[in-house]
Image 1 (cartoon, rainbow, N blue to C red):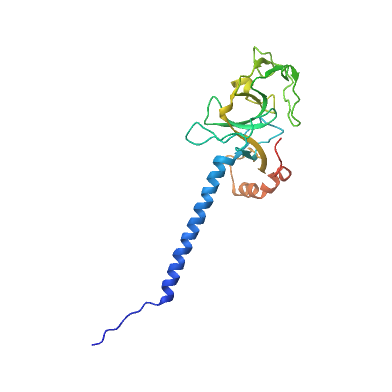
Image 2: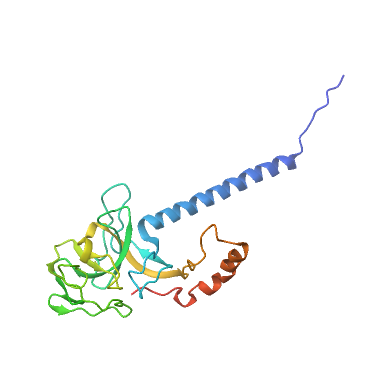
Amino acid sequence: MGKTLSIAPKGGTKKKRKRRSSWRDYGLALGVAIGIAVLLKIFLLQAFRMPSRSMEDSLLVGDFLLVDKFTYGAPLPFISLRLPALSDPQIGDIVMFKYPPDPERVYIKRCIAIGGQVVEVRNKVVYVDGSRSQDPPFSKYVDARILPAAENPRDNYGPQRIPDDYLFVMGDNRDNSSDSRHWGLLPRDLVIGKALCIYWSCAPQSRAGSGAMEASPSQFVDRVFGLPQRIRWGRLGDWVN
């Protein structure tokens, strides 16, 4: 009796190979994209969301920033080393840093003085090396009271000489900021990077009726459709200074 040979169609095998090859390509592309994103975050850029009012009106709650880590020398993960810096923080730079009392938290403030300088606050006025420091264009004061140094260092501080490798930082909302006046000087090695630009900005949702128990379908719809009105379109792409 003759044997019947079964021959698999060649087209099906080719399709399977193509499919496997496509999945490998997609996986490779995804891996490369993730790798590039991780490298960018470690060495070049980091995103930051402004959580408080301490930098008003330069930065607002709900501003999303890109922070340049490369210029100051990006800190390397898992080891206490960083890449060589192109420059050090300068007076007027808005810097992101690890909060000295709790390095797990990240803050953003403006550099007021650097190592070797003397900073003093007299009746809310900031002096650096004896000369009055010009307030940033969008800084503000929200409390007319002048607090004595013995009660609170907010309005009267120093004079304090800044050691090498330290910074003195303050929020632009001078009466409503926890900064070097309150928790001390900022070590240079805790600086992460320099604020670069605002890539997204959205006003916070009103707290009125925002509790989970009070939320209704109509309120949820209002929040969704009200989003375009809360987006600060004019701030998107603004450079931080």
